[in-house]
Length: 107
Image 1 (spheres, helix red, strand yellow):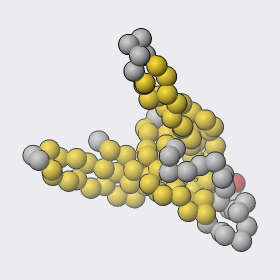
Image 2: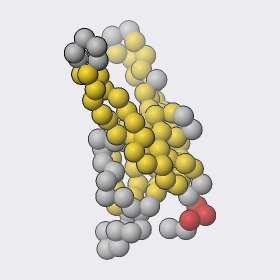
Image 3: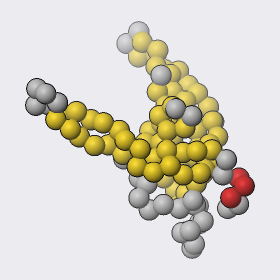
């Protein structure tokens, strides 16, 4: 993986829980780390369910290997949050090569 190919800033986010004034747990997503990667928008789709159109956009993020990143995280690219639907190690023999994240944004 060439460092020159990693041109996008990718913010890796994790969920934290806090208690609000009424005593309910509130989910908050915070940036855990910011790394260099490559983001490629792939495709979008629309689904009609119960008279409501739901649009989703998918993409792929390539970045250096990081064992801490899982499907429970999110990524933020150019101010837009995406959920991670899958994490794949690009080279199983040398884990330092990189990972591929399949991400999805709902609108």
